[in-house]
Amino acid sequence: MANTKTIKIKRSPGDQLVQVIIYILVGGFALATLLPFVYIVAGSFATERELTERAFFVFPHTPFLKCLPVYI
Amino acid sequence: MGLAVFKKFFTGPDFIRILTNTLSISIASLIFYFPAPILLALLLNEIKNMAFKKAAQTMVYIPHFISMVIVAALTAQLFSTTDGLVYHWLIGIFGKSHAPDIMSNPKLFVPMIVGQNMWKETGYGTIIFLAALSGVDVQLYEAAEVDGANRWQKMWHITLPAIRSTIVIMLILKVGTILKYRLRTDFPDAEFHEPCCIRRI
Image (cartoon, rainbow over all chains, first blue to last red; front, top):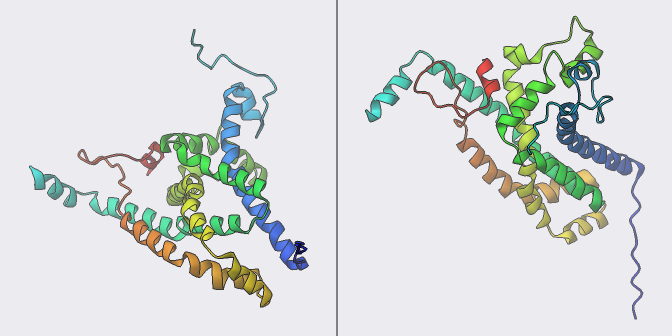
């Protein structure tokens, strides 16, 4: 039976650096598309004071649910 | 009745302004927005970690499924001078007295519109180019690797020629929509299908 061994081609340091930059760029763009949603949803659970005082947050210090409609 | 509306539109006082605004947005979109999905598709194609690639693809697709009205509301909220996230960052960089008010600057209207479209549609636009890239024969890359080609040479001589026809077709389709944006004025018979932020001009 033939010995099928996968041989990885070693990348140069410059190529590895470019690969890291590509990962950063793609990851950054993906986060840039996602973060506005996270901010808006988190802001919908926050008070107006917290929205003006804090720049960005995922979890509000004082959750505020009164602005959400309640369907019963 | 039929042609009277057209006559009224073309001879109206705002026609030149409407045409100028429409063409400036369309040309700016052609220059900045059209290459974005191609660049993102090329970057995604270079990623070997499939989990990261799939996660990034899913995240960039999401804004396409959101209405433009919601995107406009998101923009207004993010750039708001009272509690906007971007305005907070600008204050941190420029100071409170020198932070630019992006939403009220008419010169930043076209970049804002193009930026919104880029944020919303770049991810979804990569689908067609990624499909074209998946059709490239892997043996071409292997042969290029054996011949000593680096990443950029492989991209220039293999990847881009492979998707050239797709780029040309998408460019033709994009040029065909160059008069797509119709901006509201006080003209009574003008149609309005664009988000509310356009009204600021």
